[in-house]
Length: 201
Image (cartoon, rainbow, N blue to C red; front, top):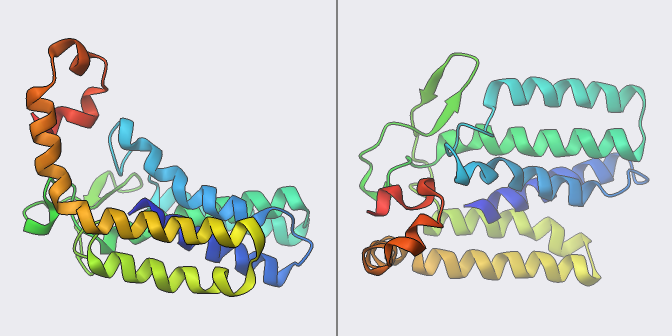
């Protein structure tokens, strides 16, 4: 789920900060990088903003630039791109893109632009919001909870609360969404991006 990717990005940021204590807002950059690919939910999800190949290459270049000319700006950009690449690559180990991924009927995990094809889901994490997804998020949050303080620590705790809530209702959300779309008047549906509701019709 998106919150797990955010927490993975925070870990990337903490790693940068451990290497370069004066790195600047790299933890925030990592969190945003972990979230950014999922902004394609409004378009072709796991394709429009997910770049396992090109994203990894861009991250590698950014890391080299940051190593050669370290500054808050270069380190933040590198951290953002590494977190975004980790997000895209790690989606391969999750479930598919169907409405009910726990049924394991789909064969698309994340699109690889380099090869022009979809990676198949490995399903090590069966679906977004699965119990194991939440547990991975908890594990990723531990370093941040141990090292951050103040609002940042509360922010991490808040992300975990959101993760827990989503994991609890994940399966029921699909049925609720279908009922909501079926009951909504056409003018309301016309105002909602089609990509968000097409599978619920």
